[in-house]
Amino acid sequence: MANLQNLAVSILSNSPGTPTGYGVQVELLAHNLLHSGAKVAVFSNYGLEGQITHIDTPFGRIEHYPRGLRPYSDDVLPHHYNHFKAKYPHKKHILMTLYDVWVLQNPALNELPIYSWTPLDHITMPPAVEGFLRKENVHPIAMAPFGQRELEEKGIEHSYVPHAYDPKKYQPTNKIGNTKTREFMGIGEDDFLVGMVAANKANGQIHRKAYAENFMAFSILLKDHPNAKLYVHADPSKAYGGFDLGNLAKAVGIPQENLLFPDPLDLRYGFSPEHMAALYSTMDVLLAPSYGEGFGVPTVEAQACGTRVIGSDWAATPDLISEDGFVVDGQPFWDEAQSSWYMIPKIPSIVKALQQATEEERHSQTSADFALQFSNQNVWTKYWKPFFEGIQTTIE
Image 1 (spheres, rainbow, N blue to C red):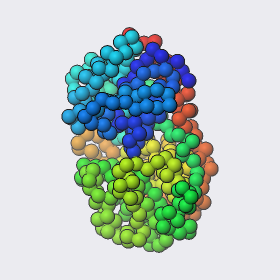
Image 2 (cartoon, helix red, strand yellow):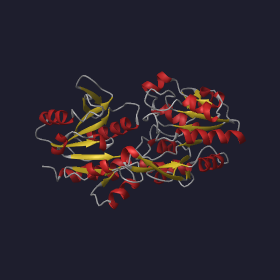
Image 3 (cartoon, helix red, strand yellow):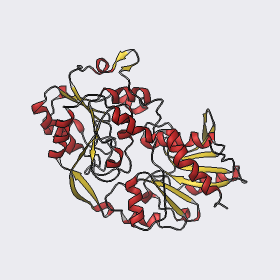
Image 4 (tube, rainbow, N blue to C red):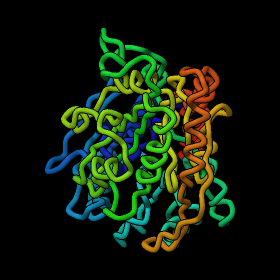
């Protein structure tokens, strides 16, 4: 590990260990930083409220600060940063963000050294995002090759570090506890299982995860493959501003017996990585086309478990899919809210990919080998370690 004993890193994101993509990434990064001697604080925008606390890890303590009153907690960021800085006055301090940067609107942030590990999920960069990333006190960190290319085209100086997964936890397995996964799920070994791992969160009208298009494509697949099942690892309700997935399934003609959801309480508290690995491993394919991804951790986790992926041929996704996976076509879709373009996946192209997936074996060693480049140790050694060693020399 690197020697980062002079460094103190504050991270704005979801709390470590929360059952979200950001929560997983923050936990992996924080552990690596602590193991290398740095001090670490996480400023929660989801996962902690009302008190400053801490999280004990095998490598040291994460200082854990609560969310603020504004929805994305930018109101409390300067206060949290200065509080943590005062605890370690002789360290070199930086503030990292792992979230959409357009939500960071507090003018006081202009005085802080910010390194934004930023998702770029549109096919054109939203003006509000570009404006933030061009600030003199902000250094962007692209999380996917697509983000690199967008920043290069804009002439914005940046770094690149991809997201990661833990290969000790995400690997092929056919059991949940002592029970075979398909038996646990109540489906047959010969059923063709399509999986979706996509948060059902939206603005109530436009859903970036393309649930409508993916559900329609699956309903068409059922005409030729009535034994197909769709497992959706998400809350089917509109509780988080997403779609009523039960109503959507009914609208496109997916019978209840062909649609599976997780237990809502288990989903709320979070499935263990080992449980998720078992679910990924038993899928015949992960269905993951969307309007745009900044990274898309489930695509990597699924492939680590030997499962092929169907994804979009734009934004971050095509660089994250193995050569034996499937990419689908799309057409531009205007996002008025952010004055930029998404792409919307074409349903016939999704159907074609699903049909092709039915002809493949369930396990893909090619996909599993491809995912290894995103293993936690590789990402730390190849990207984060030289990044933090480099910035130590530039911070006052």
